[in-house]
Length: 328
Image (cartoon, rainbow, N blue to C red; front, side, top):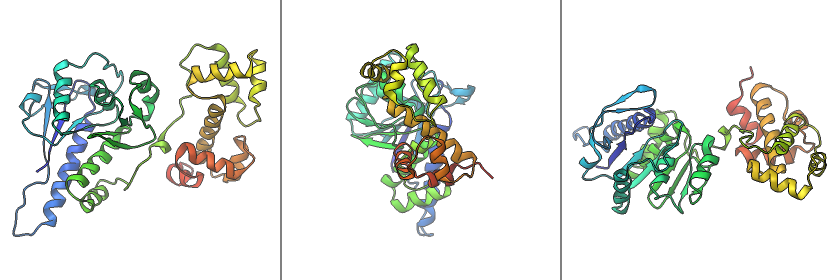
C-alpha cells in the first residue's frame, strides 16, 4: 500500500494538504468499486499529516491543522508532499536544519518528494532541486529564479519530474500532482476516473494560458520605465525600437542591454507580451473577430499574430476565447 506523508508547516495553504487527501480518498473509493464484491480490498493509499514536532500547526488564514505525528514518527513512506504557501515566501536560511536533513535522508532513501505551488521554494531551499528541472506558481517565477538560480525552472509546465522530485504549478495543480501519483501507484484508468470525478481536465501540461503579464516594473531605471509606459500606451501603433531608444537619449545597443537588465525581457519580447495581453483581454470580454483584434493590437498579419499568441499562451486565439470568454 503506497504511503503518502503530507507536511504541515506554519502558514501553509490548507487546500494543498486537504485537496490531495480528498483525491487519494477518491482513488481508494474507486479502487474498491472495481474489485470483486466478495473481497473487501485494502485501501490503495494510506497517508499521514506530519509536522516538525507533532504539535498543532496554524496554516494560512488561521486554520488549525492537527498532525497525526511528528516527522520523526514516519518509519516508511513512498512520497512526501510539501504544500503551497502564500507570500511572503522568505524561506532562505529559515527552514530548520533538522527538517532539511530529514528531506535529504528520505530522498537518498528513494522516497519521492513533491512540492505543490510555492512549496517549490521550500523544496529548493533543501538543495535537492539544484540542477534539477522544476516548475512553480507562475506569479513568482522571477523571484524564484533570483532566489534559486541553479534550478532549471520550466515555468510553463504544470508538472515536472526529475530524479524523484515532483513539482506542480500554481495553486490547484496539486490535483494534477495527485492524479500523477494515482496513475503511478494505481493505474491510468483509475487516474482518468478520478480526474473525471474531480472535474480535472486530462493531460493538462501547460499553465501558460493562465499567466497574467505583470509588466515587470519592479526596478528603478527611469528611462526604461518611460520606454515601458510608451509601449503600453501606444502598443497598437508601429513602434520602431531604435527610434524609441533615440528619443530617450540612449544608443539602440545600450537600450536593449538596459531594458533586458531592468525587466528580464528584450524590448521586442516586452512589446509582444504587451500586445498579447491586450489581445487576451479582448478575447475574454468581446466577440470581435480575430482579424479585427489582430489589427487593434498592432499586427497586420493574422497568421503571424496567431503564432505569437500560441507561443505565449499555448493556445490559439480561438481556443483561448472558448476557455476564458466572459462575453455574453
